[in-house]
Length: 472
Image (cartoon, rainbow, N blue to C red; front, side):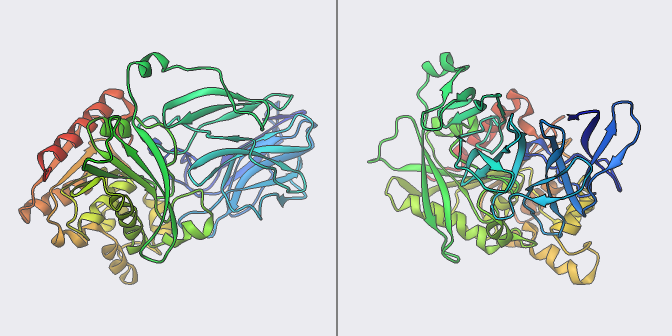
C-alpha cells in the first residue's frame, strides 16, 4: 500500500511462508503464526524496514491519506486455539503504536481509511451477521453502517464477503440474505435499506421456490449458554405434517454460519428435509469468552450438548419426526458428526465429510501439523502428558459406541484432513459391522465443492445415504 515515497506491506518471517489466516474455512488454509509483521520499502527497492516486532500476527496494513500513519490488523500470540484480531495504529516509521479496538470484543478485518484521514472502516462478524462500522482515531466505534455482508461462500452459509468505500463515504459491498447469493449493493444512507445493483440469479430464482430460513435463539442444556440457530423449512412446508430433520454442522470450528444463502442447504430442503444449523460454542462473532470455551478442548461435551439442545428446541415445535433425524458436516463439522454418533444413537444416519478421526495420526500427517500441536494441544502427541488428551478428544475413542449408519466422504488430495483419517473410521466401523460407506473423491482437495459438479455429487451422495436409512 503506497505511502508517499515508500511501500508498506505485511510479510512473514521465521520458519515458513505459509499463507495468513483465511476468512473462509473452505479455502483450506490454516493459520501459521510465524510472526507476520509490517514492513516498509522505498519504491527503488532499497531501505527495507521492519515496522512491527510483536510476537504474533500483524497484517492488512493500510497507510493514511496523508502518509503519516499506518493502520493494521493483528494480535499478540498467546497460544490460544483462537485469537481475536484488533485494529492497531502507528506512525509511518513504526512508532507510537496503539490499539484502537481493545474494548471491542469482536475480531476485525479489512481496514479502509476514510478519505479525510479522520478514522477507518472495519469489517467484523456479529452473531452470524457480517457488518461494517467506523473507528475514530481515538478508538471510538460507530454504529454498524452496513449489515449482511457476505454470501461469497456459495455452498454453506459461512462468513466472508468484502466491501469498499468511496471518497464520499458510500459503501459498496457483497450483500447476501438467505434468498440470494452475493450481489453488489450500495449503502448511501445508514437509515435507508441498501440498494442492490445486481441481481445475478434473478432469472434462475424466478423459476424456483426457495426454502424459508428463520433465526432462533436457545439455551444449551450444558451450562445455559445462549446459542444462535437457524431452521430452514422446505418450500412447501406444512406445519401440520411431520418432517425428517438434518443437523448441518459448520467447520472451523472457529467460524460461523448465519442468515446467508447456501446452495447445499437449499438442496436439502428442496428434497423435503427441515434443516437446522447452529453456532455452538467456539463459533466466531460472539467474543473471546465464547471461543475460549473450546480452547484446547475440542470437541467437547459442551459443543455436543449445544447442538442437541438446538435440535430439541425445533422438535418441541411439533413438525419434526424424532425418529427421522440425520446429521452431517464438513471439516470441523465432520469431526463433530463423528463425535456425535459416538455419543448418541438418536440419528438414523450420518455423513462425516473430511473429518479428523484420530488426533494423534492427524497431527503428524496434516499440512498444518506445526500449528495444531501447539495451539489445539499443549505439545506433540508422543509426550506422555499429552497422549491421553489426543485420544480422549478423538472420535476414534468413541467408535465402540457407534451404531448409526455412517458415511465418510473425503477428497483424495485433501492435505488438511487426509483421507487416512476417514479410512480409519470406516475400517473401524466395518470391523464392528456397523453399516458404513467410504466415498473417495478423485482429485479433490479439502475444498471439495471448488467445482459445482462436485457440490451436486456430494449432496446427491448424502441424500441417497439418508434416504436409504430413513426410518419412515
